[in-house]
Length: 200
Image (cartoon, rainbow, N blue to C red; front, side, top):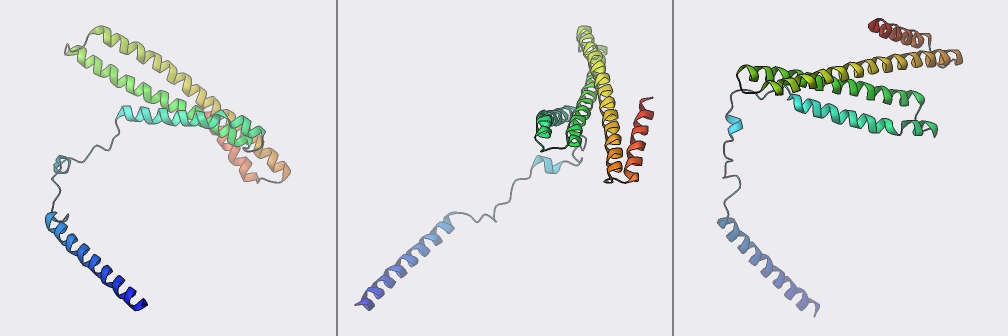
């Protein structure tokens, strides 16, 4: 009895496989093979000139703005994390220093963009494509951005100097405790002297 059941199951399975194979052959003949189709030639591929490697100023400003926002988010809860022992004081100081650096870079990028805009406005006024009012507005914006860039630069210099002073104090304290080497203290002193020389 079991032989009869096994034989009938085998015959049914063979018939199903044969039927499925026959249908797949029919579908293959209806659809062209994917390797037979060549993709169309794209216009970008015909270009002789290499793509520009310089990023657009707008994208540079946007990238720096994102970096600044990320640095601010990272620094936002740093003091709380320091109080509960997750971060060291040095890591907190580094996060705030990074914010100052990002602010300075962002302000300088916006200033460069404003300078380009003023130059473009001047050329447009010369060719009568733009009015003098638009040029004056661009110059006012340039003056404001120049002031903002100066303030950001001063803030960055002050933050770097504060960080270097704190690092020197930290290295001296670690040297007294026996955890640091004299070369670490010397390196911190050199960095502080270098920053003070740049400021003067």
